Image (cartoon, rainbow, N blue to C red; front, top):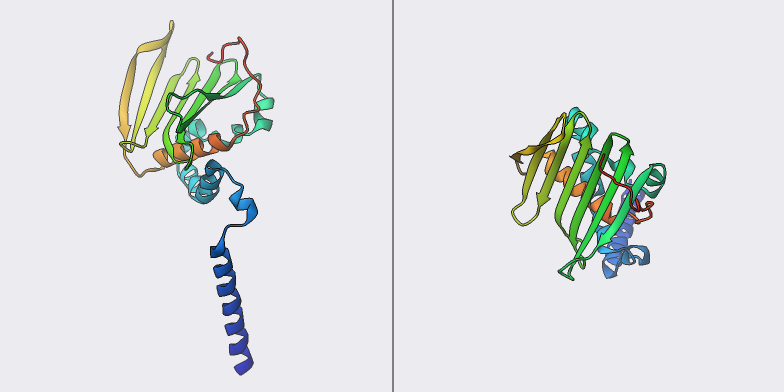
Length: 200
């Protein structure tokens, strides 16, 4: 019994030493991460849970994680990932535009603090011809998520946009932040659309 207690104490001491060593400084690989990569890694579990709790119909429309890789973008006819100029040098702005098929396209846009990686704004717009266009905008300043909808008409999208706010703390705002973090860690290697139009 004494040996078992001693072994347990030694194991606990080893864990404590490891924890103290970790406090002395982050591993080199962790220190080399950008602020965006660090936040994405820290939030990965929660981000995945947020997207997993979306209602099925909304998940099919909003969960585009599978498209946020260079490999996925290379398989598309049109793709463009671009760092945008910012009037505020402390902010990073990035936009991804994809044509999924001849009748469907999406745009994902994120703004974040360049030093800390903290998200300031995320926008998502997806259009399906003959169905319409839906958009979501999350902004950190007021912690507000705005939903927008344009109805499809025989002449294109309706000029009348329907708007509504989505409650704080639910899966949609969290899913938006998850996509924004993933976009900011994505290497912008997607083929440029050149003069081709992304929007169907």
